[in-house]
Amino acid sequence: MITDQDKKDRTELLAPGLYLVATPIGNLEDITLRALRVLRSVDKIACEDTRQTQKLLNHYDIRTPTVSYHMHNEAGRATELAVQLKAGARIAIVSDAGTPGIADPGGQIAAAAIAAGVPVFPVPGANAAISALIASGLAGESFTFHGFLPAKEGQRRTALEALRTRGIESQGSLIFYEAPHRILDTLSDVESIFGSAQHVVVAREITKLHEEFLRGAVSEIRTKLAGRTTVRGEIVLLFAPAAVESTTENRAVSIAKEVRELMKKESLTEKDALKLVARARGIGKSEAYRELQRERSK
Ligand code: SAM
Image (tube, rainbow, N blue to C red; front, side, top):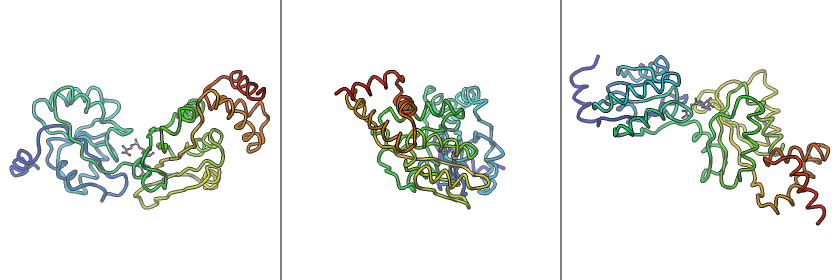
């Protein structure tokens, strides 16, 4: 029930526009005072899942009407909401958890509002990637967020290999969201592409009862998780691989070194090691072989 006082508060306190409101990623206390005021004062809340958001609204006794806004109706709903925003509405967008627009719906309505000349207000708060990073022990000065890796193994490996060759120095710590049923496969791919000693952090169930941070060599972490009956919960994976040399000359030199190291570490034949190095660098096997020969002939 919206009272006259509620309506008065809205008009006096909240400017018309679109509010992108972050909500908790587990612990219901992780919501800002401003987020609660905005959710209480807007005309409507567009939610990724109205039932999920209703639990949060009930907890804080917020009675604002809700409407669905998810990946299947995002484009159509964005146009509809943009018309209402243009007419002076105050609308909040929330996702199921965390910050809208980050691996979640929110981007299209923000773009539509901006195109319609409507103010867009961020209401910052919880986010799984940043929460994982700050407690990971990895450098936070420079990082890149990659959302979810592809579910299919081949595509996932290609994505990881591309990251390896893209010049890790310029990307800082890498942050990924991952599903619990895929984490073991992804860690296997990280191990074969970046080496078994690659330091990784698996942040699980952040801010929840069973919050857990596993830090160590990828091979150890994979073995630890594989030893469990099942891996549950929400996961963020982070790691900061060493830089790969990228000039042609350096590449030729380091190809031989990398092949030698892989042969020793992984007990591979030269042919198999070269195949892996070529894949990781995004070059063909014959190009990798030519570079190897060039170095050896020096
Ligand atoms: N918009 C959200 C945010 O700001 O973090 C992310 C939404 S995305 C659809 C959901 C993914 O975020 C999960 O699959 C998981 O990888 C990660 N995630 C969300 N909550 C988490 C938590 N409490 N602990 C660990 N990872 C979490």
